[in-house]
Image (cartoon, rainbow, N blue to C red; front, side):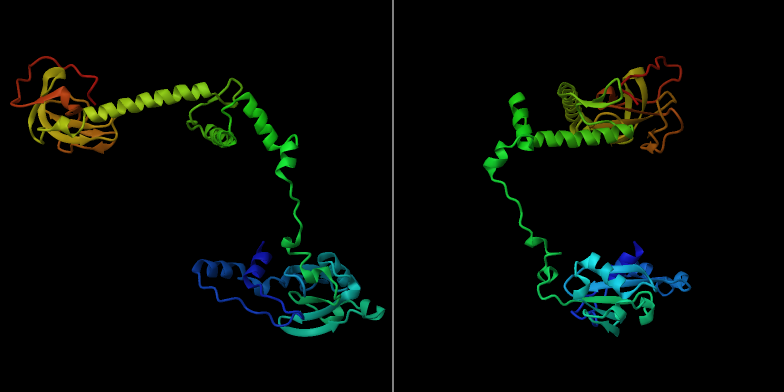
Length: 355
């Protein structure tokens, strides 16, 4: 709400008589300054559309309350008595205990005593020359007013209801009672586990709506509803552990020691198809399945699998052209004295361990 935001930026404390208000410290944060500029940009013209109407927007403050009611709508024909009744509804101060002080900014325009006569109570607001944005400050003259002691705003004065552990433990239908029943049915049940499961269910439903993989143990039944099954979670965890173990084994099998002695530009022969070429790359390739080191070979002939790139990432830029590149593990080739051979040599079989 633009009106609320504007007044939050400029709100100051009100003195008992509603006099000059203390200004806040200057705003130094650039973002807050930009926000203030945006919120207050049209302050000078915000009442233009109401110029030719009986409507008047007034701010209401109170001597005992921190609350500030912003731009409350009145008609200029409304009486002082009506204004006091509105203030009574908002602050709790009865009309006969209201001393009203009218302000235009920090300039006091008039005072209406709490013991005003019927003639004054019948005066229209237009009589006082009130205009948009002016403030009506109510001074509560009741020495025993509840508002003076903070009863309307200070929540620390509210006596809290306290229940003993024994009373709560004996009640039925409470969270503790429900958890106790769950514990009887499942000795391993805990509220923490239940809470974690519920949060996971919410996340699983969200992921399912987005078409993304759900956490382990969650599945979609025949009706399209997301459900949880601990057996499914167990199976998925076992599969994950198996995959992790396989990946660790591959990482160990094809570690740095697996490519010792293999250098760039060395001549080599790939076992599958006895294809010859030279080493063009040695290292890890994240785009390929399985961790560990790979060896890239620039073949003498176009009998390979690629042009030296993997999924758009170039690893061997000096291949003569398409199908001159192949990537394999170090145990699928041999480095040594392998010169280019006759083009009529046979065998061009591919290997499943090549990419």
